[in-house]
Length: 84
Image 1 (cartoon, rainbow, N blue to C red):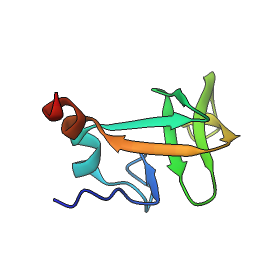
Image 2: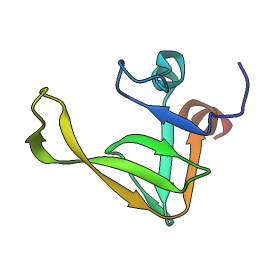
Image 3: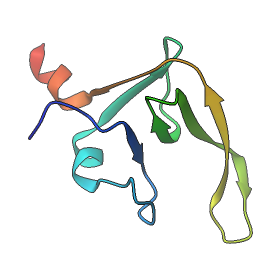
């Protein structure tokens, strides 16, 4: 498997940016130097992540999300754990 991560990734199975294999391996993500564990989607080139807005749902039953902008960095969790 390639060490490069996609520019954009989503945890929503209905999204075109969903990749189950990458999500099973584990992805670490930080926004402006702060690690985030609640991201629903990210885009490195555009510099944003989407996080759930509490327990609020839209009319289709999906969580409402907020777009947070800043410097996005992502890494594989399994590779960093094996390096220790």
